[in-house]
Length: 154
Image 1 (cartoon, rainbow, N blue to C red):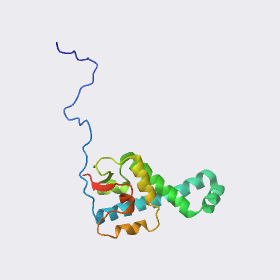
Image 2: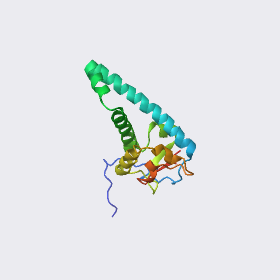
Image 3: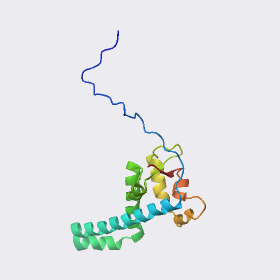
């Protein structure tokens, strides 16, 4: 006897993919990595300016005085970490990666864990980290240290 199907069970589509397929782990080249950097830093600068406007609008001159008294590196690092950890942690992509059709993955080609994204973002704060891209491979310290890759996804 065949089990009866519940009339309240939602219909299933033949197109549903039960689990996302891993992407092929072929790191993108210097050109796409540079494009990601340019777009992401433009967004970063806009977010930093927006922070200043919001602080001035909400807290007025007192807020601006506090903001000015803080070390610029600390404010910049906070905005940078919030941007990268927030977007890559939730989606595996930043605005720059959306524009270039790339994504952060782990060695298996699946979504990088939050811990890897956190390590990747913190590694961006290493002095002279940007120079780690000057080698043959387009894989900087913020990728190699946490074990992540940036790959094409479209």
